[in-house]
Length: 435
Image (cartoon, rainbow, N blue to C red; front, side):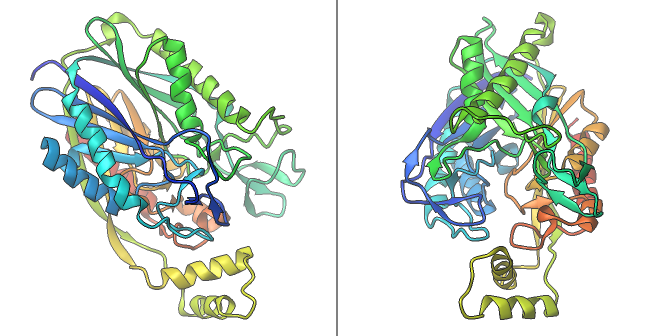
């Protein structure tokens, strides 16, 4: 095993104005670019094994795009597909790389950026230099809140509103851990920082402006803290039931459309900078074992019953076609009736020394990620959501019984009961295999 090497690269993947934007119930067309979108790549080598990741400022990165990008990476630099993790951040102000609810897919965008994602990783490989790594963690409990609440009527509701007298308590936990991987040269110059936090997104009132959301603002803030240029990446975690809205308190007053994004980014970057500066010199290692394992597991999607599909078709085909929630969900059932009912999805595990990384292909509920962390054989573990594909929301079995938005059947909500155990057990086993 040789000494660790690390390389980074960034490629612009900003779409054109007029593109469809995904993340709301209704379609939006981009009419301004507030900040560009990027594919940010980090490559690592121990002399024998090269691994790495590409984090993209997209709501998801579909398997079709991932597969093309990984094949191109293998062609360019010889790194096998199982050694590269490609994930989205989940910004809701990016292009509709996949259609959902009232938003059609932006045709051609995924095909256009697949080679750009590959280029980013290939350039990172070619820029590798001697490196040292260390990892740490912080606590961002003020910025992560479970958005599902038990109500007085016995139901569970997403986003019940601030100080709602009918809201009793959150229906699930949070994971406030901010994971941090720091890479520097032997001369102590920063190369990269990979952060990981389970937080859905922050958002802006400018819904038709392209933006990478707080994920990019975090990177800018951390670079300001460090006083140096480095690749500063925020990878999302298990965030399916998490946002930054504290419904037990009054809503914050925002001073401008991006003030929430900037504020959260500053808070999280400050916590990352604190954790970074609490590291000791002996925490930085240059002799580091690397490894990766990727396994395809079955995904038996929930499907509408014959009765549910008949009712959906009747509403969908009715005259007038009102674009309300009932009609949109009826349309979803009609559309997914033509989709596959069973396929395979990737569960990914990586090792960077005593740090474990898990890639999960969806908007995974927090409890699932906490279970993986609790059973991981590594000193610290980062769970990366939306990795290598996305099947949409992956709720716990308990949440599927409770209901609400994250469990309502549609094209991006099809995970059946048993998914939480299968994915968590597989992730823990793969972590053991790379350990």
